[in-house]
Image (spheres, one colour):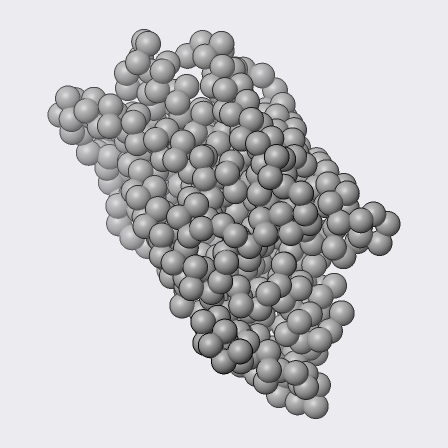
Length: 507
């Protein structure tokens, strides 16, 4: 593919993003517009926006790369990322919207009446947001290098600049329109090329992805055998698989850029309807990346040995088609990939900037100005970290973000919404245990490579033991500190679980 085509695809997506984001400036005037779009986003628009921001670099590039490298057991990632919204629907969506909070720290303080819990929650939001932003910048760098041959660091910089323009223009109001557009662009960008690639595969006689012709480190033939382990995987595939399931099922509700979108719905009923639509949109999308991974096992197996499995989606058209058709389809895939980086980065920036502006910058600047200053910090710091940590796989980094979210905000939200016995001391202890243990695992993964020992497996995928540890700590410490139970907890729980229509009918 010519560099001009790749550069053109990046420019077109970036200009469309900026144009749509700038449009939001015309209708964004108040602080509420910037933080939660004045809580007026319809379920259909909100679901498309959630799909846009949730389907990140890990979804667009990482899932196919994981299936290429490690086989069918990696399908638990898309299954878990989708099923996480089912857990969110059942346990969190409507009560969280009824809380009236702007951010997760707002909810924590309102539920527990503690500034210390709010401060710790704010730090965790920023940490998880930055951990999730790092692979977006890395994926953008990979895409730009493949498309243009330019330095990978420039790709992350392009995403950072475009995201800042969109977010600074109109906050959540602008980002909602941008992300809704980008969901449909990403779906189209994967769907159209895969149709042509499957026709080529059928024309070649439908060779099996597990055929002996594909052999990376002796891994041929067992790629579709669940729990068989794989090249580069730990020596404990059963544990790894269950830990991935726990992280992805329970981590979704703790992702700050996901949770903040439910504050934009008019009421709890709209939040539930939004979640149902999201499940359908994610289900349609996640059918596609595994197909690219399976085709990669036929036509691009060498990418695994070269350490470039994340490039399989962008590499297949050239390997299978060639010519003008390959160039056109690759340009479409590049556009979709950049849309993935931009939409997810926009949502994360809004979530992190909302917390930083409220808890830090607002001491010196008023609402919208504080938000804009915080947005700059929310983007530039993780971009710098992405440049330093350029050897961590896209899906690996996102998986770690899910593990930290599942180990901290999942226990806080579930117990805070459904158990009146939670106390501020219990919440603090649980957040420190879950965040500390999972955070240590993240640091270790970024610093050293994996291994075959149990210690390596436990730290590479920590959710299976850090989530229960956080839950047990919160419950035990809360029971030991019953006297710290907030006096307003009964009233607050009624507010969380009473539909808005009932409250209106009763005056």
